[in-house]
Length: 102
Image (cartoon, rainbow, N blue to C red; front, side, top):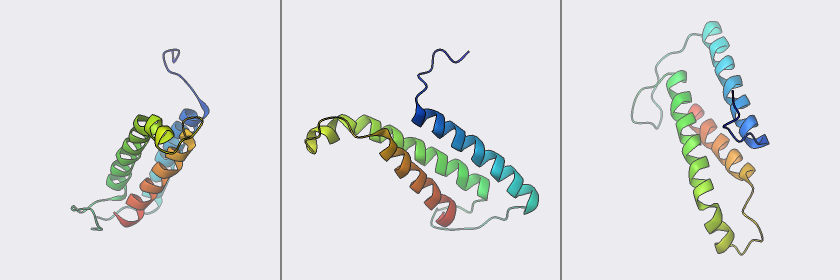
């Protein structure tokens, strides 16, 4: 069924994290219903809104990193492209920032 997809460890970890976040958010919503609040995002958001915006932001961080990995290798005179784990950590930081302060 998933033969078309290239499964690597970072891809599997990324999808597992998304599933765990969705399960955690569902449990959290049942325990403590969300309220609208306004952070530095230009709109009032709920936890679910911030999760969605954070996941989109994390995806863009990963795509930008993948797109620029060859340039990073060239600019920094590296022997190989930088590890995809760097973009994973950066994207999780962006997600946490949007969830906390957004």
